[in-house]
Image 1 (cartoon, one colour):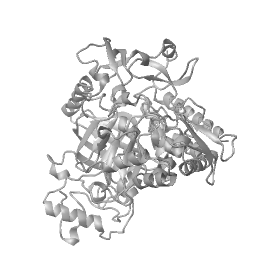
Image 2 (cartoon, helix red, strand yellow):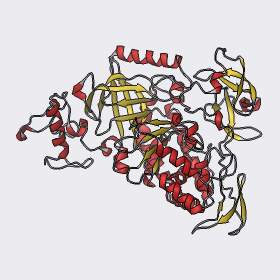
Image 3 (cartoon, helix red, strand yellow):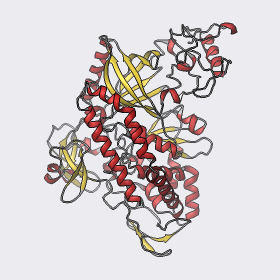
Image 4 (cartoon, one colour):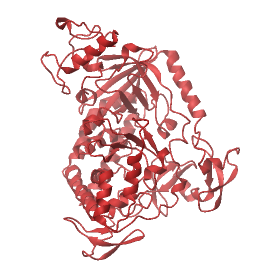
Length: 602
C-alpha cells in the first residue's frame, strides 16, 4: 500500500514525492482543491494508517491528494471549466498489440444473443440474406437474415426502409439530417443500410391538447380522453391510463447484448496526467456503435485506476485525484466536440444529479514517443464520488438500465445491470413499475404511491432541461443512457442521466407537452397526463428556456469553449486533416440549434 514514515516529523508524502501541487502532500485540506497550510488533516491520517496496516511501499511519485483513495475528489483539477487537460497513455508495444488483437476478436465474435429473443432464434443455422420467418406476437412475418456489427437477425420485410428513404441519404453520413417527400429524418443504419428514418417525434413541438380550450373542457391524450385542468400554471390534459405499448416485444431485453458477446478486456498502461504519474492502470475500449464505427487509433476508452491491484498490490485503491473510473469519448458523433461538456454544465446548473466532464488532449506512446490522438471528452463514470456527492451515500442499489424493461412497461430483470450490491433483490424496481401502472381512479393516492417509489418530480425537471437543449438519445428516444439509484434516505429511485454526445440536436423529440410520446414511454405519459407533474415540467421548461436561451448563457458559453478548444483542434488537424473544418461545421450546427430553440420559445 502507501509507504509512510510513521514518525510525525517525517510524515510528508509517499515514495519520493514531497510537497508539490500534484503528486505530493501539497494542499492538505479535505475540501476539493483547498490548501490547509501544512496542517495534518484526515486524508493523510487515513492513508498513513492503511499503508502501515498493509505494509506495502507505494511507487515513486505516489501522493496523498493525487493517488490516495481517502483524498477528496478534486473536481477543479480533473474537470476544470477553463482548461484543456493533457493525458499521455504509455503502453508496451506488445501490450498495445494484444489490445488490438482483443478488439479484433471482440468484433469477430460480436453478439451472443439471449436465447429467448425471436429475432435471433429465427436465423439460427441460416446464412446472411437467407429468408426467414419470425413471430413477434402478431403472427408470423417473412423476413431476411441481416447483420449490423453483430449476429444475424431476422428482419421483417415490413421493417426495411423504402428506396426513397435510402435515396435520401445518398452522399450523406451517419446522423446527418435528411428529407423525403413524407418526413424529415436522420440518416441511420439500423442494420439495413443507411436510410432516412423519420424523426423520433414527428408531431409539432408545441402541439398542446388543451390549446385554445378552457379549464374543464375535454381533451385527447393519445388514445385516452381527459380533462383540461390547471394547477398554478398552464392547462394540462389530465387523462387516466397509458396507451398500448405496441411492438415493445421486438425490443431486446438488453439492447447492448446483440452488439458484443463480452466487454473489451483491460490492459496495462502508465498514465501521465497534469504532472502526476500512475502505474499499472487498467485501460480498455468501450462502447457499442461508437466503438464499431471508430476509425484509426482515436477510439472510445475507459480507465480503471486500480484494475491491476491484485497483481500489483503497490497500487491498491489507486485513484486519479479521487476518481477510480474515467470514460473518454472521441466525439466522433459530435463534430463540435462540445456537447458532452456543455450538457453536463446545463444539467448540473439546473439541479439535476449529473457527472462531470472536461476536455482532454490524449497522446499515446507505445515505445516510439507520444503521438497525438486528439481531443476527447473525459467524464467521470457514475458511481463514486458522484453518489456520495449528490446523495450523501453510495449504499443504495445502483443500476444501469438498457433495453425492453427500461421502458418501464413491465419489469424485466435482464434490462437492469447492477453496479453494486450484487446480491440485493430488485424489489424497489418492481415496486416502482407497479406504482407507475397502478389505478389512477384516486389520483392523489396514485401520485403518492408513485412518489414513494420514484422521484418523479426530479425526473420531470430533468426532462424539462432535456427538451430545452434537445437531447434525444435517452429515455423517450431509446431506453438507454441512464442509471437508476435508490436513495437510502428517501427510499426513492432517482434518475441519473448519462452520455450527451447527441445532445443539442433537433433531429430527435423536442415535444414540450410530451403528448406525442406513445405507450412505450409510460413515465413520460405519466408526466404529460397529470396536472401536478405536468405543471412542474412546464414551469421548469420555461424557466430553463429563459435562463439558458433567452438570457444568452448557452450561446456565450459556446463562444468561450470555442476559444478554449481552437488550439487543441488545430494540433489535431495535423494528424486528422478534417478536424478543423469538422469543428467549425459542428459549431455552426450547434449555434443554429440554439437559435432555433430560442426562437421556438418566443
